[in-house]
Image (cartoon, rainbow, N blue to C red; front, side, top):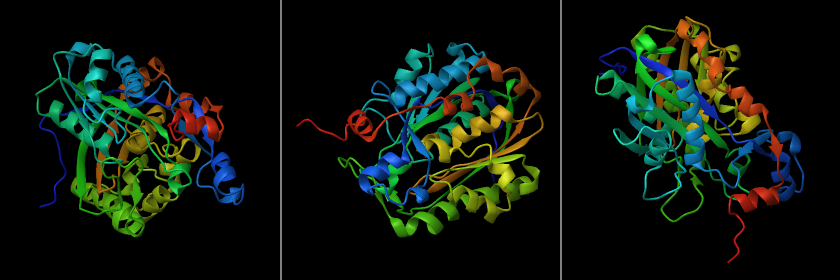
Length: 354
């Protein structure tokens, strides 16, 4: 029986925050090295965000979560869970979430865990946080979606594998800037993208990437959610879909009946690339930055392997009073320091000294 997931208690997003590193690698730099500068007009994105040499998923998660705390104005000690979703955790054995909890003053009276499901690890963390608070087990929960994604040198993925993400503090609906109406997940064993242990870079299951993976899963999660809630695309002010490139989110939006005007605000892939676990959540923060009370918002992620989480939120009048407490998503996107390919390769340890 297909039914959307709804918490026992009304809950929503109390505070949100974004973070995108300031450094940018132009797509023309990659093309210059691997294509001899040819076909620049056909490059998939303008540039991609790049973490600095002192940044990783943990440091960026702390920045985004700090912004969420500023907006929520919640005592960190009241946050009873910290869940970090990423496919680029710095440690193979040691959670990122415990470091974030300690740095923000949330530890020790909290639960913490790392989530992994390729690009939808962040929305998994959001679902868990919403369920945790919605069950009454916690008053507030923190969910993080963050990545410093990897791309093999010369691979098509190197153009779009970027860095950044978002954090969300979840709590009672009475405190929320966006109240959850429902969520639905659609998951299958579809091998479209994978990386085995000890392999440095992921591999593509190319013939599975589009129709049986991305489009099939998002189309099902969104259409089933809308059917269960009695909604149509026209009921949404904005919709955010996972952004592996510039074409896929536009195509799936059109297939589902959404217009280009509904997805414009949350489409960040052209200017910063694909932030993987942070992609759709980061786009969602951009939409929240511009949303009006009463707007209904759709968030739909995709994770290779494969699955999609879809959410419907309704914005409250509390949104107007919290935006200026932290930098906007566009503040982070617009600041930009370009680096060349050699600097990028050294920072990302693509050049080895031994």
